[in-house]
Image 1 (cartoon, one colour):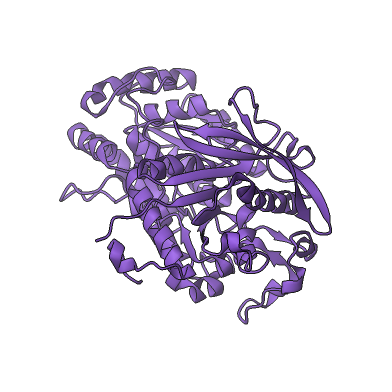
Image 2 (tube, helix red, strand yellow):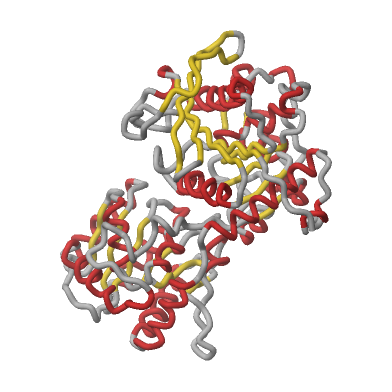
Length: 500
């Protein structure tokens, strides 16, 4: 097997930890590059410099002065600041006050234009930096125009002649759908509209994600199970015909957890640090969480936690149908999250009716999140669909046993406990049904009574390796596949890879 040659990779994402975050995309974009860099590859990240990102706090330096960026028939100026992730991963931040000097990140009327500008600026800066990537790794709809451009607008540009694209789908439900005017803004109106015989309404709109899927050299989503699920109408969000057409270039790679950050032995937010060898110290965190949540302090009462966006996708419809029955059981419940107003109302009622037994925090607070991971006995995720899920991985890292619906990454990472063999690391159910959820919780409560067996369950979760190291190697393999698909002189078998 040939030794892999170091690659040059540009990772494009709309949000990146620690600079800006609204969801799991930021965690991936902030953690994966560090793991790939550790494998010896030259990976760099590009993102917008939002107004909330303080250049002084993050020690950002000017990388490029303002330069013109084509936007339809006029020019906008972009400057580039440079920061760092970890010790040595450069992060290029695209600056433009008009597009990014705002309080938030998303949900603006000109979002299409804002992210087209980010992507175009990122490509235009590369020549000025004198750094040509082998791979441009694009994430979600915000960057999906880049594979489209490399096959159209930039197809005859010698600078990108050997650059391949990888497109990662984090959440297929958010596709970036806009009117046709965006094609003019992106400079590709002359290349026409997308049409698919099984997706006739696609011609009526511009679907950025569909373009990323169609034009990328390789596509992946964030778990193996979900890569199969999205080929079906149930999970495909109306893009399943296109995904089936490209299934030979579609892969699933599980997200990882940054174990340097998510570590109960060093976590500064929790009441008592602990590790798998000293699980007895964990009880101090449960008692501290009960105090903070105004729950009865009792280490024997099973405590179930949830940290989530409150939406139907996350399974709160079926949880709402059974929450009163659950809270009739001998357990405590703590939830943190924000989302749909009717779920705010529902859980506000739960907190009032079951005061002392249920606590609800309609907010997101990073410090409280760590306390919930460290202080709960069980962690509930009844999702309708879940491309990967990170919370169940963090929960296991902290010794909180997951109870999940067996979909997507939840099915790939949480194996239902088999009481006869002792195999498994949590509890799962398959039907999207309130009583299936209820049954899984009851099974967890019954097993919680057997402390020695429960301790083994915790240890199994805490010692599992869901770090980025294994997934990063799979991404590097994916990059070589993309180069082979692009037509570069690469033979997959030379690197221990085979055609799928």
